[in-house]
Image 1 (cartoon, rainbow, N blue to C red):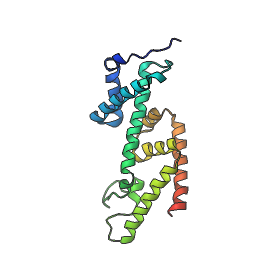
Image 2: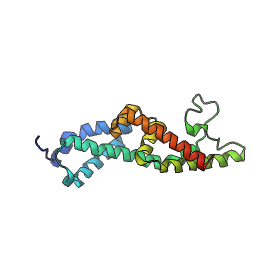
Image 3: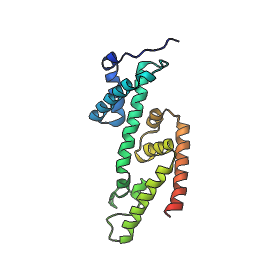
Image 4: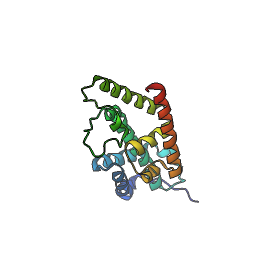
Length: 184
């Protein structure tokens, strides 16, 4: 099989539209997608010496972009993690209780114990998630917290649905054990 060669001078003409469409379908924001494609091209240039030629140039760039999308979601999650637990959900919401974050104590309740309990639970959840193996934590966040479809998570992380559900199960089991030890 012939080795593929990198041709960075042609990347924009050949791959920019494809990579942009790939990114925007995952982040649903054109500006963020443009930034991710730009970061992908920059990372490709920086790591060109590591390109072995085993994959096509576009395939290699897509794999870099996948990592950029995952990093984008990691950054978002690290910024909002505790805030999600403290969000106020009105009691007349049709979807109340669907999310773990909706089942925690109401931070605006007049009962002072609930505010303290909510802050402690939020911290305990975040601490427990950080103790999970990195890939397991990422799968749990993408599927359970962000609500990404099984297909999208599998495509992003290059895993099959069976692996995804095994990782979700293991993450939930580990989180429950961790919360039982550190919070309940």
